[in-house]
Image (cartoon, rainbow, N blue to C red):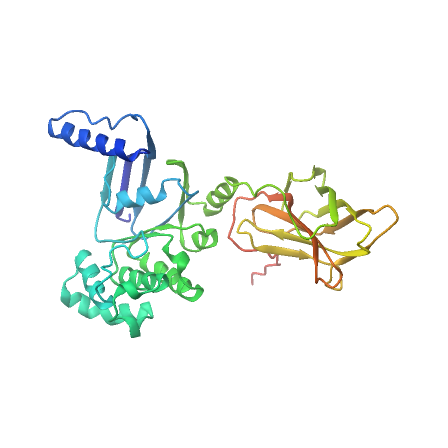
Length: 403
């Protein structure tokens, strides 16, 4: 059985919304602790709230836990307690081995020291001797890809350079526990891939906690996921797709948005799959392989002789996964008629998108696409129900052969 390196038992942390009141509470708690009195850790006082409440989990060597949740869910507070920056008000945290953490951009760096000097400082904090750091420093500098700036003060580094250096130190020092909080979001694409590969290597000998709002990254490297909501543990599972789907379902795709110069009025939008129907702004549940029918009614103003129609489907990451055009890969042309009222139907066969909620945009452009008359975002939604979600844009069914 793998060694347990992180164990949280009923961990809770509260904060006070009022700064002056928080100072008073802190002073009372310190004085109370000195006299052996109860510090009111079990309940909330005026203006207090639980940032983290009753969190229980353990993480073994060789595992990577994806910590996900909305902004303000308590993820960063939990990580700061794990890293020893703040103490829990209730519960117990057990950490074993060397701990490397990238919790805040530039945290742990002395801005007036050079990158090289900060490498030695960070290595010493992790418990490495100068000789051990001497042995690793060339690999750290090479990984960071900032060799020509390594002897410049860190205060002159860009945010991406700080991330490169911080991750290079954490990865090459091979800690027993590595904590990463969203800092990779500021790195360039190439370096992010490099970091994700490094995390995969570190997992052979470390326990990793990875916080990210990028669900494809979570799916790629994590073998467990923990979903937090307003400080509480909502779900912990090794079915990454289930956790990701529940995370996406916590968010609304937003109300209908209308943009453009005008001239087109959307009257209705209807989505249908088999016997299920959803109207304008509603969500249609659909299964993989189902055909999707989209019908919408609109009115053209008299001064618009014709429009080119375009339908775009967006995934949860707000990336386009389908651009529905006609067979000539152009927008579908609708010409003005006597009433100005038009009804259009189209069919998208065998939907193979990834699991989760997708939004639909209806676009009314000039025929040469030089002008956008109207764009209706979130005109409708489709939700693909599944117990997996890889983060891919769409799924490709194939015939397997086993010789």
